[in-house]
Image (tube, rainbow, N blue to C red):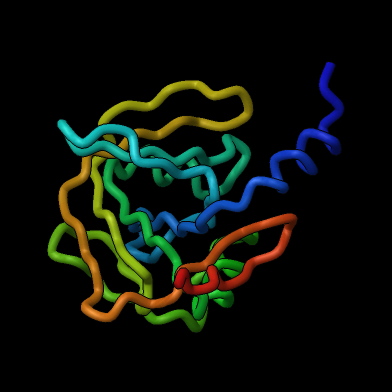
Length: 161
């Protein structure tokens, strides 16, 4: 048996990008989660995946909505990252967002946004593996500094020379 605390510490040693996955809830409000478990999967067809915890309040809404927006966070979005990492229904209180043409809630200032429809879902232990078919890509003209997660902390990815 792998000790959970050690497992988390070892996984935290791997720096990763940070995403927020959003969708609309049944009441028309924004629902979402902060996720570092995200990856590109396929280019043909264009597929990406993220892995929400089954225990998350947002997981059933993301699953049932069948569409979502994955925000690749900029270093300026720490407030948003912490807000969507929490529990509860009002995660987006005080956070500005707009509705895309595809019906997804979009957060301001992301490094990039990937709008998807749910393609497949697989079991991944205590997490779901949700695969999205990419329907739209948004890349700002001026690329912001991306956010990274490492050893339990959020920070900016330094510029490469």
